[in-house]
Amino acid sequence: MASSFGLAHADRRSLSKMNITYADKVFLMLDYPALRALAEIIRRGSFEAAAHALAITPSAISQRIRGLEDRSGAVLIDRGPPVRGTEAGLRLAAHLDQVRLLESTLTGGFHPAQPPVIRIAMNADSLATWAMTPLTAAPGLIDLVIDDQDHALDLLRNGQVAAALTSDSRPITGCDSIPLGRMRYRATATPEFAERHFPDGPDAGSLSCAPALNFNSKDGLQDRWIRQMTGRRIAQPLQRIPSSQAFAEATRLGLGWGMNPEAMIAEDLTMGRLIDLAPERPLDVPLYWQIARISTDALEPLTRAIREAARISLRF
Image (cartoon, rainbow, N blue to C red; front, side):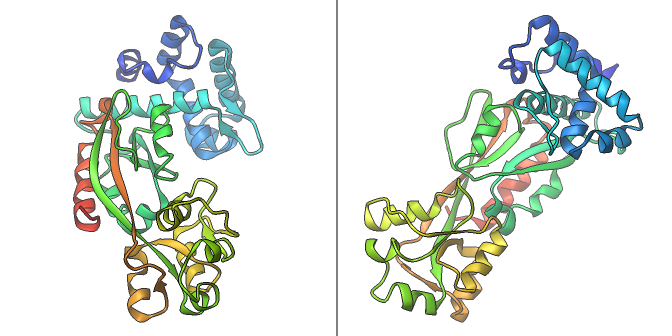
């Protein structure tokens, strides 16, 4: 009964963009088993795994999803392969997670067998350097979405996460923005790479020819540093390495130059394995913890831990 109450009275904004009628919204909110089935499929990546987790048959879980889709008039699961949630399905699953989190605070805790799921967007570099430890303070199960700090806010804006680590200070509607500090990046390469590609130091000409490391298509750090150095945008040969640790290792192996978190490569600089291409021109990225106000109280322990870790690790 508590779940139905929470679903009926929780914040409805996360459903407002899905073209579902008000009557359907109310019905969906009250259909807790079907919403839970949806969330499990998205989280586990298959109907079979979700059915096993819920101790029901694959046929039963398929019926629940078909019922939800019929009532909402929207496709909630992309059957794939791979199986994944549509934008509408992700919003509904996030809404359910939010309700579970709120209910855990109303009851003074949660049952160990069914803790709330807390979906957070965070950039890989923060996770690899300073932000993993504070996650132990989360009052539930963590579902991390790894996204660039310049783009994580979109997930919060779309209602797909409860909080996000972002470089944008502007709070979106219904959220609070907490400044954490600045994460410092250094343009680094091996001495051999620098001697071969930047004999006179990095400039527009050499930067257009030297292989640059790139995390993914959203990674704008190298471009940002180049504009800071040269005042212009320059196309570079790219080596794509979508892992913070592997990115740093690729730099050590001489695959290219790249913007590495100072904390991750400090020892390499000290030992001479890497050199700073422009010691006087680091790139500082401001970070903010943006959190949905409806989740503020429930996530207070996590927010406190994030702020403390940032105070120790980031620059001000």
